[in-house]
Length: 221
Image 1: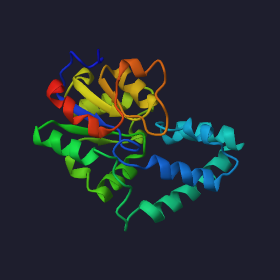
Image 2 (image 1 turned 90 degrees about the horizontal axis):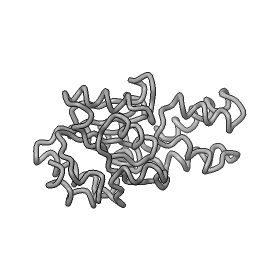
Image 3 (image 1 turned 60 degrees about the vertical axis):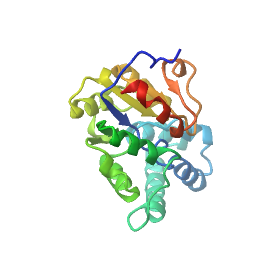
């Protein structure tokens, strides 16, 4: 039985990168191209985490914080040129737009809780045309502790005016799913670059795509 089978929700909180936007792959590719000494499995340790936590991981892998910061700057320049202002931004993940439209049609309040910095979250959602679907929009630099801690989801739920247990969270990473579960939310996990952790997956509804979520909406709301 699905861990969400007996639960009803009042609002939905979405992650952004790798879930709504197909951004994790080009970001990963930029890092591996600009830092050939970095292994794919090393970078994947940062997926779903905020910049300070990711910086700590990458500093260890690259030998120093200075080296990691220099590469962050190079990656930021490349991504801004390819996907920043003046472009249409990152591509949408399959099913993202249709799911958001369906939820809006039902009047379900929607929020974003992304590990990405708040200003960058606003930019990416604006460029892709998704920003108007959401009320509260929060980034990883707005809380003291990033995912897998529950702080970001607790903030989003408070901004929605609900208890976290009344929120349904969509995530692509196990770090994010763990934080949402700790907050008490229900979790739909749509893996992107990484398979879900073995101890996390049974606590979530795991879907292959956001396309698969629409059929569940009558059970949740």
